[in-house]
Amino acid sequence: MMQEEPLISVVIPVFNEEPTVGDVIENVKEAVEELRLPHEILVVDDCSTDNSLEISKSKKVKVYRLKRHMGKGYALRLGFEEAKGKIIVTLDSDGSHKPKELPKVLEPILKNEVDLVIGSRFLCKENVFSNKLNKIGVQLFNFLIRILTGKATTDSQSGYRAFKSVILESMHLKSNGYEIESEMLVKALKNGFKFKEVSIKFEQRTYGRSKLAPLKDGVKIFVSILAAYVGV
Image 1 (cartoon, helix red, strand yellow):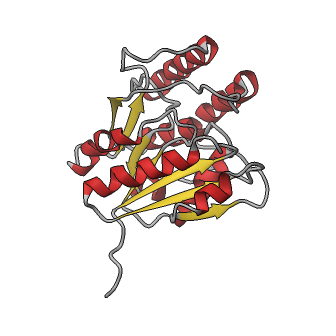
Image 2 (cartoon, one colour; image 1 turned 120 degrees about the horizontal axis):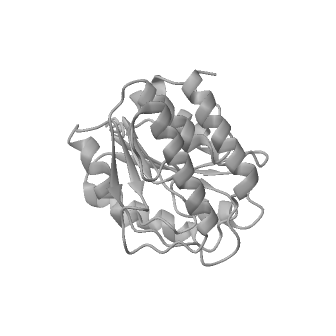
Image 3 (cartoon, helix red, strand yellow; image 1 turned 90 degrees about the horizontal axis):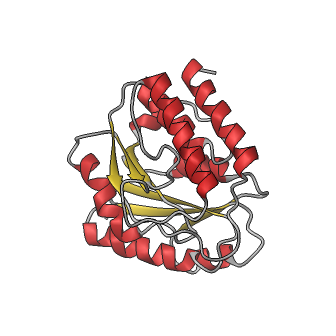
């Protein structure tokens, strides 16, 4: 019997997330299995130096490993190239996103209402953000995207999203870092794709340090928004 092609591909980028990646993968598996739709889970390890790779391999999902540390954007782009689904989901591996909310993120696409769904951390009043600088940065990027595209968003930097694979076919992504979310959003809006935000619960990282450098990555995100808009 031929194996059914996946409808949904979940791509999870990983870099040194040993304490959480195992639970994230297990919870994603549970969430997509409850949907009863053909699916695949792809983990892209960005050359972790802890046990993230070994833990990921033990979960019996597709695991890809970069030969050297390249960044979140590069890892996602590799996952997109390998994904077979008509719908692609991305979420972070640090435990900040809730896989059980995956049906909520997917619903508008499964109903063919939109092409891209962003899980917004700012639509949920329960969420508390300890890093005020990051919050202010997101708001500034939201404003810039609205000025350029005429489309309002509350969380342009969210890594929890679902989108039709045809979006990827319409653009050439270049980002290697955290700026990939902005690049994709601006290019999708420019190409006329419909998008919607849904409220998600977000748990601030409670161990280790965020890998996002506010100033350095902020500049990259700003440049990526402008470059995506002018078509560079």
